[in-house]
Image (cartoon, rainbow, N blue to C red):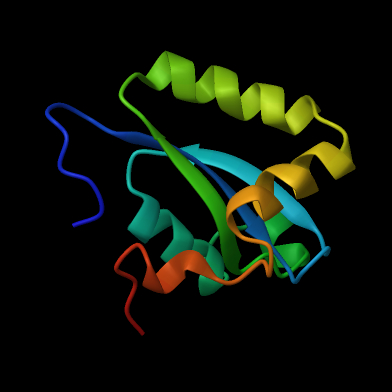
Length: 104
């Protein structure tokens, strides 16, 4: 299990097509399920069209309103700010799928 906090946990995450490629920011209460949906192309729209299949960044929140606010703020950021956020913890833009308990 990724997190075992009391109550619900919400995740703000960034998916990418490749290092310095197209990025998508989202929010979910089930990061493993949502990352899987993006990886497999099951999410209609932007991530499917741009092949954003690599989970490159995420953070957990205990409050849905805070998670949504954080997601909206990141979406409004300039591109280079998003890249710096990713590279602070993931300089190679590695797929974090395996770190969250993902399976093939």
